[in-house]
Length: 91
Image (cartoon, rainbow, N blue to C red; front, side, top):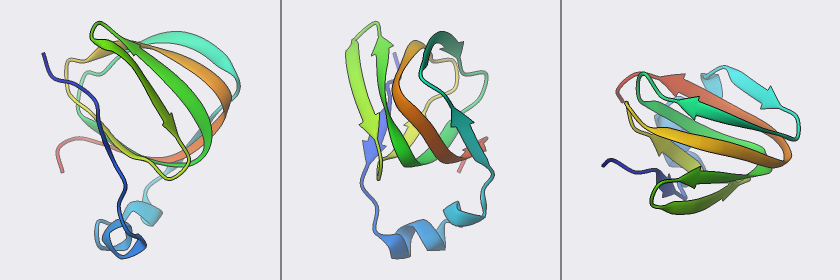
C-alpha cells in the first residue's frame, strides 16, 4: 500500500515547484473520511491534522510538504484550522 510522504522543503525548493502559486484550501476543526482519486501535493501554511491510516497515524502541520498518493484512503482529524496550498495530479 502506498503511504503519505511528509517532507520539509526549503523556501527555494517550494518556489521552484511553484507551490506559492497553487490554490489555497482552508478547513475548520473537524473530522472526516477522505479518499484520493488522484495524487495530491500540499504545503501546510497553518494548522495541525492527525491523518489516521491503516498503517497508523501521521501528524501534519505548518511547514510540512505532503504527498498523498492516488487511491489512498484515510480519516482527517483536524485539530487546528488548516490553511494549505494544494495541487492534484502527478508532479
